[in-house]
Structures are given as structure tokens and as C-alpha cells.
Length: 623
Image (cartoon, rainbow, N blue to C red; front, side, top):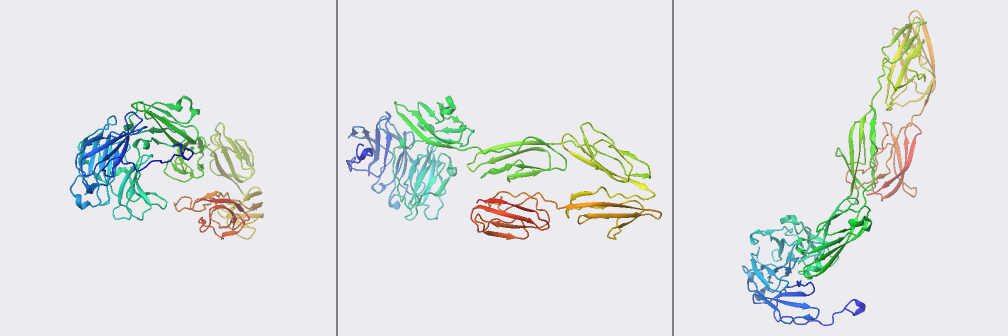
């Protein structure tokens, strides 16, 4: 090991260990935790040989044991593996010509004593087909996997069953597909079993992702790992079983317990965990076999597991753990909602997915109902944060002025709500803020009541004067008007005739521009005229444009959805970051999804078709 600057160098090779042997070979740690047993099997006999390997070299005399059947010369190929605790062996006595060994035993399970090197209690398992080649134990030692490359088959034996041979079940391996022929098996340091494929063109290996699980729950994935241009062919490298020891974890998120465990077959006398999180104080260390640890901060942590094994042997396993941050979400505090009002709850978080209490998966929801609302926001790493609030119904003031009133000329009336509620503020159409209003002129009078919760209710009453007829169009006014909510002048009186400044004779008139308007109201005996100055200005709509779309075809946020466009058309122009126009329409239909365009930032300009209102900004395209 001192050669090549500490990298090491093989200085002696091709040393004959045993005069006759099959290719089956394995190495198991000695019970003393220092030495190794090198195990093999002779050809044309039923003898297993076991050599002791120490720091001084190989002990020349092997320990010889007999197994359950003679390994014929044609059965020279196949794997020999040890269980994770080194106390059981499994071998496959394969052949290059399966027709020569049809009906001959080819799978065997044995006990091994790591203190003496003795092999005992051979159990010959029935071959599931004709011949076997690959064998491997699951990390917890409860399952045995065997391959038959001649028939493209993979089988699992349940080592906890009373009749192990009868427990064999086939594991589907996509028969008939190129590269689906399993051969050698090898447990990896990640706790998964890798499967060599004999096809000469396939540049991948298959993988058993959950080898401790029973039957098809072991989750075999055909060609699950690419070899980047290389091939596995029939075999895989051999390892000392303890070199593949590992521990597992479940969980990966900040402020959530992460569970750690290792196979019970390791059977340590004691353990010591170091979670690589000194900021957690005493909780950074644990002597439990299967502890949990909660990381308060995201990041990468180096976790160490030290196993104290029988015989005084110490083994330390290390693994990095990536802890991901929880998404930050705040949809607001508990609140009250007035009747007719709507509230938008916004949980938008970059790269996250959403699930609200009603099952919707959008970043925002808008509601006009009371109740509990919550959202689970899940980051791309799979970490979830929940936020919630309660919406209650806000109380509404009761405002009732009563029926319309008809008065004679020269009289007055006091208008006020029938029930004046404590804490309610009032505002009349003329700006007066008392709870009552005395009027001596005809017209429409309204009062608006607003309570402490901010909810408002309005009621109105008409006051008529008879003989002569009296008309009141209201005070000169300035307001905005839209086709959806036009401003209308109303001169309605009972039993009269009307004539407006443009010659029309209806009871109402809708101004379409600023100006002075008048109406003459007549009876058979008298008439009256009223004039009003109306100033109309353009109503600007409240338009919301999101700043990101994700047109990946999943049906969620695939197109630019603009809120508040109304019924009047809006034109839309899109520019890229260099100012080049990439999209234009005179009537936007909520369907721009950046087809044919690269991800990145784009700038938009929205224009209202019947006004000068325009909205501009930027939007991110992220697939």
C-alpha cells in the first residue's frame, strides 16, 4: 500500500489457492473482526473449502465442509454470496449448457460459522426452471434472489417461511424485451440489488429498489441504471459483504423528523449516531438502534454511524444527508367578510405545487364564503408547509328608510333609518353624516350605513311634490360610466309627461358624454323643469396579470390568464427581452402560452379597445 504515493500496487498475483474450483467465491469477515474467510467450492465434489486470510497472509490448510450435492464439472459457473451478517451462504451451481443438468440441484442455502469457518446445514432449493446463476441476499437477510439467465427469469425465496423451497415466487422482468435477461446479482452500498444483463448491446443494469419487500413489492426496474456506454454482460464484481453495509433514512425536510435505520442482521452490541448537526446540542448524538433527528436548518449534513460488533470490531458508516427547506407561505390572518364581497387567498411560491382544502391546485383561490381555508404548499424537493385562516361573516347594518313619500308643495319631512344601531356611521347623498335628514324638496334621497366591521348597506326613498309637478335629477355630478354600469337620469313621477333636451319622451335618460341635461315634466295643469350638469370620465378597470406561466402541458398555469378584462376587447402585444415583438392580437382570449418561444422574461402591453387604459409589465416563462 506504500507504492504509487499511497495509492497501492499489486506486487504478486496469480497465486494458486486451491487446485480445483468452480468460479464461485466469496469473502466473509472473521468473528474476530480483523481477518477474512475466503470461501469456494470444488468441481466434481460436494466439498466447500474455506481459507483464513490474516494480515500475515493465507493460512495454507483450508477448512473443508461438505454441502448437499456434487457440483458436476458442467456446473462450474454461478455465484456464491454471504448474508449481511455473514452467517448464511447461498450458491448457484449454473452451467453453460442447461440441458446437461436438467433436474440436477442448482441452488443451495447453507449456514456458516465465522469463528471456525465451518459450513453446515445445507438446504437444496428446488430450481425454479432448469439452471441458476446469480444469487443475492436482501439487506435485512430475509429474502434470497436467484436468476436463471437461460430462461430470462428472476425468483425470490422467503427465508422466513417454514418451507423456503415452496416460498419461491417469480419476479416479472419484462420477458421478450431486449436486455431483460438477468444474470449476476450484487447488493450495493445503497441497499439496492443490481442485476447484470447478458444482452450484448444493452448499456444498462436492472435494479431491485426495495429488496426487503416480499414478492413483486421488491420493485424490479428493467434497465433501471445506465452504464453510460458500457455493458455488464454476465457477471458483476465481488465484494466483502461488510464493505456494503449501509444505513437508510426516511425524510428530507427541515423541521420534520428524519428516521434512520440499518438492517437488524448487522447485530451490533451497541451503536453511536452522529447526525452532523452540532447546533442541535445533545440531540446531535444518539445510541438508539433506529433514531430520528430533526434538522432546524436546511443544508448538507454528514451523518456517521459507529457499530460496535461482537469480538471488539468497530465499523463506521458515513452518509451525506441533504435537508431541504420548507416553503414559506402566508395566506393572511383570520378575517371577516362582508356580504357580496370576495377575498383572494394567495399562496404563490416559486416552483411549488398547491392543494387547498377543496382539492384545488392553483396558487390562488377567490371566495365569497365563510369557513376554514388551508393550503399545503409543496416545494420541488417534496417538502410541505400548511397555512390556514378562518373567514367569518361580518355583521351587516340594518338601514331601512321606508316607502316613497308624496308631499304637498311647501311641506317638509324628516328621513331617518327606522332602527338606528349603535356604532353605525351614516352618510346621505348630500354628504351629511347625521342619522336623520330634513328635506323640503322633491328628489331621491339615500343613506348609507357603515358599521365597525366595514360593511355597508344603502337604502333610498323618493319624495314627490304635487301640483305643480316637481322633478329632481339630482345634483351636478362627476362620475365614471361603462356600458356594463351606465349612469342614468331618472325623472319618474306618477301621471306626468316627459320631454328631454334631445326630444326624447321617456321617464329616464342615459347620458353618453359630459354635458348639461334637462327634462320638462308636465301634467294637464302645470309643468316643471330641472337641469343637471354631468361630467363623465373614463372608468379604469382593475386588471391583474400574473408574473409567471408554466406551459409544460400539465393543465396548470399553461397560458397567461389575465383577471379583470371584462367584456370589452383588449389588445395584447408581447416583446422579448431585446424588444422584438413576438406576439400580437386585437382581442386577447387568455390563450398565450409562449408556443415556439424559449423560457425567459417577456414584456407585455395591454390596451383597452374603448378607452385609453393600458397595462404593461413583464411575465416569466418557465417550463
